[in-house]
Image (tube, rainbow, N blue to C red; front, side):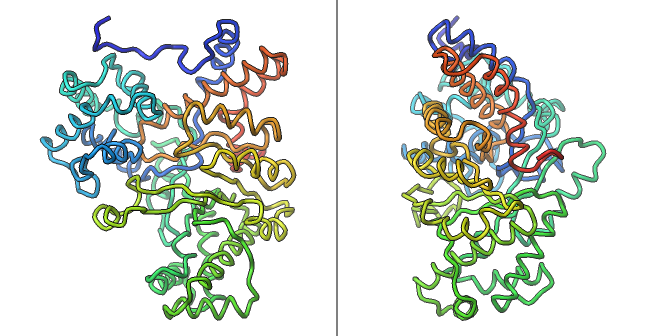
Length: 475
């Protein structure tokens, strides 16, 4: 095999010990072909509705994936040269961006991004080549040639990837027309579910809060000029989403506070926010109250609530002003779940119709706070590692730490949280290999019967997220 040739090892991510590896191989074998359930992600539904060929390798692998672009940016590459914040790149610019990735490919060594992309190169596009400046043009041409074929259009890949359910992330005022069109198309047999993402409509400190709430009210057909109108509009739009296939709502604020205000104070502060005169501390208090409202609404309508707080969004103001949001400049910070969700869980945590999945980017919080919460409240589930900790070692640490407290039935299943369509199978396959690795170790240590490990292997990849997110009739 030449220096430029590379085939991912069939035992990648499985234990190095041969005896344990044999157990893991068997467990992974029962996981590998299971359908993918992706209950949280950012793929545009119009990708599948239009089913147009992917434009080029750069727009598929680089531009939409902030895991890829942020490291290149850290190494001095201009995001504009990667297509970020721009319209479709011309062919010469697309090839130039691909060469930039090749020139910096060594910087991705040991990262999950490189693992995912090498999986995609080999498993999806059949390439057995290491990306480098010398191979960049050839790999670009090989991928581009395949992208022109019907078998590599989005819907064909959706089927090839065995995606059973794909959830998108959608604005509360969205009419969800692409979702409706997909659901009505007999030639498309997959399920693409919208997700209710109301964050910006719950942030009273925003300068455009009045404009946003006016738009929310217009979409709901109510006057959202008052707090009571805002609550009515949220109730109506959540029901609209549920009627159009949504199973969950998604929330990501700077903290996870859910303290409720006195009704009169909520009305007063909402009016001040609409007038642009709300004080900073009052804006935080009202936001926490509005998030608590979402929990009460979830107990009414049954949408699964997912909380992934504690991220400093758009940390680089200059980057945000030039390129917009979601380009890799979001930085995690500390969060206190125990005290933050206490008001919410004391309010609706024992309601049989309420369900919430808690996520964090701080590994210690999973074992110290989230797992104990999920180990008591019937409504609480521990989310999977995501974003900066959806990496092999972190996922193994998560499994070892969390399973000691809550086992596996109180966890959400894997969450890929991706905009990069072709990385979906790579990320889910990684998770399945690591679950096999983890379970095989317990079997080898005689802490788990092999029969029990095999049973878990049949449920963790597909059945578990389907149950947690109420995607099947038996949830």
